[in-house]
Image (cartoon, rainbow, N blue to C red; front, side, top):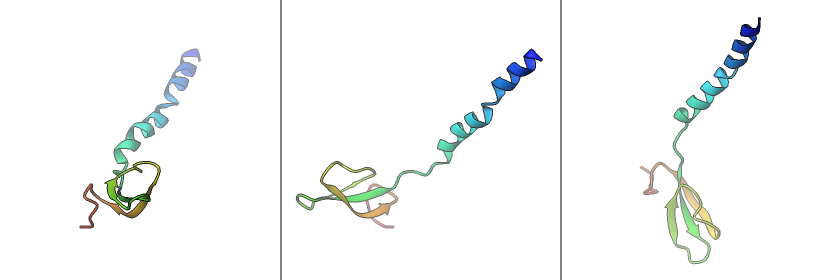
Length: 69
């Protein structure tokens, strides 16, 4: 009985660990966005915001060129 309890406790995390290891492999790559400066209107292509003062101008795009293909 004691061994069964140990085994049951040890293996109960396998489904959760399996999901945690498989999920990143199934994730899609992040989209690219064209960002525009609210200060001078310059544009910049990035996956995340360049910082304060930048707003999304268009997107999403599939690559770093920020052009629709």
